[in-house]
Length: 177
Image (tube, rainbow, N blue to C red; front, side, top):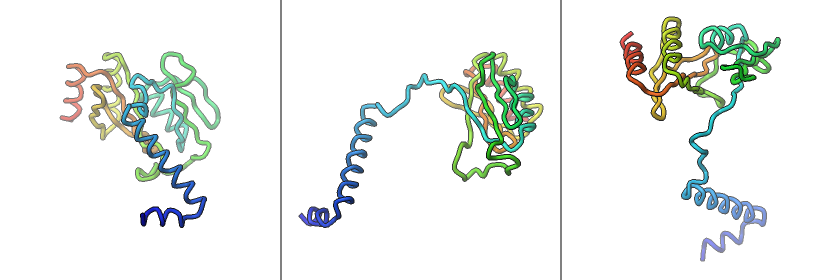
């Protein structure tokens, strides 16, 4: 009874806002219970765009080290891909030219992952990266194994592949190094 009296004393706008908030909260709770709020697990990310501080450093990391092909080069952006796609990865300096590495506590993208489905290609890339980069991390995600590293701007990159004995051995060697 007291709660209803307090509710009636609220202005009309506040009562409407409370109704909407409670309605949305109820709707999202029901969706979560029936599983309709989850994205399909087979979803595949088509491409991603990153703000970087220097295109030369980004090309050295994503093209020369990780092996993405440069599909298009503009004065302020690079578009890279695997397998001839128009681009899986775009990097630009539109609002980030000469910016310091990202603060890990700041809002925004901290890391992303991609999967190399072929074990031999993943092993070759892992070897190349291990020879060039210090501070690699072993990554395990959804039954896949991989390596984690950061680009020059502090963006984390996870390179994953299906788990296998050879991949586990390569990661064990990484941990021992």
